[in-house]
Image (cartoon, rainbow, N blue to C red; front, top):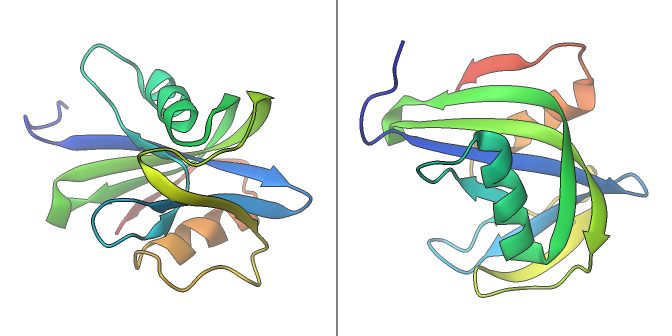
Length: 136
């Protein structure tokens, strides 16, 4: 099954330090807090897109681990994938795409997030041996 032309495919990553999750505050749209990552560009894989986006947003080099979830977003003509990742280099910094980057524990997550965010965090916390598939 092929994706329709115009479908947005994006990948995001859970990066943890000391039990906290790295989030970035977007410099665009509604200025939501989000997992680092972004849209896949023509000619790259989803893995390449996530690694590139995280580098652009945070200055950090990462390697991707297991797939956490696949989320279809029919209202936005989008498909989002979340991964677990590990920082392997670079230094955390803000960029022209984000105004802030900070680690949050799951009991102190920011409120200004998109509605689907908390479900993705729960999916990550569940640590299932397989990826979940959801419509959001």
